[in-house]
Image 1 (spheres, rainbow, N blue to C red):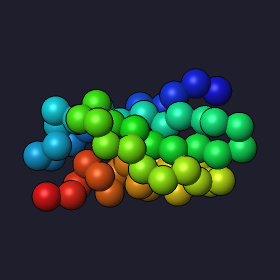
Image 2 (image 1 turned 135 degrees about the horizontal axis):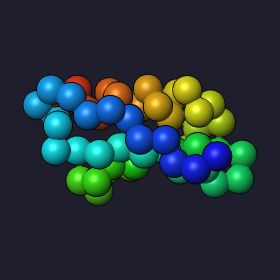
Image 3 (image 1 turned 45 degrees about the horizontal axis):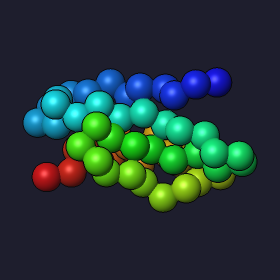
Image 4 (image 1 turned 30 degrees about the vertical axis):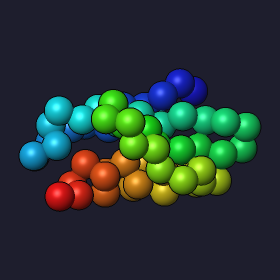
Length: 56
């Protein structure tokens, strides 16, 4: 599966997040340059992306 975009909303609407798979790990990335930690859980990587979008 390819990158799954998270839906932007709220004050971070200019950010676009995706999840990237590298081997058995998945990480979240944002168009602003932010990257989350590598996770074995795709769901946790998506949560990292959602938390980034809602961060002040």
